[in-house]
Image (cartoon, one colour):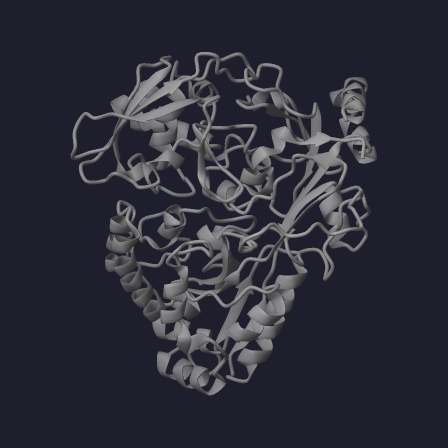
Length: 568
C-alpha cells in the first residue's frame, strides 16, 4: 500500500526545491489535483481570495477551529483548539477559545489569540481599510479578549446577536500568521494597535492583510508564508503547479503523503486542458462541469467499472447555485431594466442543456440541501421559468434602458460550458432586441462588475470555483447592502434587516417567513437571477485512497492530508 508513497517521499528528497518543477512535471509519484479556481493569494479571506480557488487549495495549510466536511457541515478541528460557549449572560453569546498548547506555525512562532484578534478586526467591518470576503458573523462580535501571546481568548457577541453559524467563525483560512502582518507593519504584535484603535498602524496592517500575501507563480518564497496545518506550500510555478509538502512542525496526525501537486487556473496542466491538449496525469479533480471541454478530464487510473450508488437519496452535485449577478448601475441601474433582461433568459433551457440534470433553482439564498428549499422553489420564480421575448422587449422600453439594450456578461474564462450558456442567452435575448456580449476574461473579478461587464455568472456567495455550505447564512450576506460579498452593490434596507434577523434565527419555522419576504423582495428588485445547482465534476483515480468528494466551498480538498497513493 505504501510503497509508491515511500518512493514519492524519496523522490521529493532527491529533487529538492530548486528543481521541483521538473519533478512535478513528471508527476508519476505525486498526487496531481486539478481545480478550476485561481490561486492568487495566501489569504483566502480577502474578497479576491475568497471567490477563487484558494480555499480549495489551502484548507489544510491554514486550518482553524473548524472546517467544512464533505456535506458542507461545520466540523470542529481540535488539533487547533476548542470553542466552548460560556453561561455568563443569557442575553448574549460568549465563547471561550482554548488553543492547543502544541499549535505552532511552520516558522516556529506559536499560534496565539493574536491571530484570532486579527481575524476579527479584519472581518468585523469596524476597522476601515480591510477588504474581507464577508463580515458575516464577525460583525456581531462585540469584543475579543486577548492578552498578546496567550493561548486563550474570550469572544463576546453583542446582545441578541448570537450568530447561528458561530462554530464556523475562526475556521480554516482565517488564522493568517499575525507575526507576518506585525513585522511588516513595524509593531511587536497586532493586538495593541487593534485595542488602541491606532488608525495609522491599522491602515498598514490592512494593506498587508489585503495584498501582502499575494501568490504569483514563479515568484513564490516559501519562507514568507508560514503554514499552520499538516501541509505547507513548498513552491508555486506555472510549469510545476502549486506544490504542497508535509509540514515537519505539524503536531497532529502526519499528512498521508510527503508531497502533492495542485493545478489551479493559469498553471500548465489546467492551461493544457483548456487548450485541448490535456494528458492523463490527473489523479483527483474538482472542477465545474464542462469547464475545459464537453467531456471532463478523467483520472489517469480510473476503474472501468462504476460503483453502485449508496442507498438513500442522491446528494446534490454541489451546495452552490449558479446565477447571473447584475450590477446596480449602468444599463442595470433600475430594477425594471434588470427584470426586462431576466425575462429574455431561457432558464428552463439553460437548466436542461447545461445543468447536468439539475432542476431550475428559484431561490436566492438557500442551497439544494436545505429543508426549506423545496417549499421556496415552488413559490417563487414562476414568472421567469422560460424566456418571454415580447415581455422582455416591452419592459426594456418601459424601463428607460432603450430599445437597444446591450448587456455584457462576464465569467472566469476559459470555460466552455458557460460560454455556451452565454451563446444561448444571446440567441434568446436577440429576439427581444436585447444585445448580449460574451465578456469572459481570465482576469475577471468582483471589480469587473459595473465596469468591464454588466453581469457576472457566479455561484452562491459570488464565487468562481466551488461554493456553498450546509448553512447558507454566510452566503446570504451577498445581498446585504453593507457586506463586501455584495459585488453588485444591491441596496435594500429591508432585505438587509431581514438577513440580519435570519442570521440569529435557528429554528426552520422561524426562518421560513423571513426567507419568504426576502425572496419576494429579491424577485422584485432582481439583483441576481438564480439558474440551477452548479454542476461540478469530482473524480479520483483508483491509485489514491481516502478521497471523499466535498460539496462545499472547500471542495474535495477538505481532507487532502488524508490522501494516500496506493499500489492498485
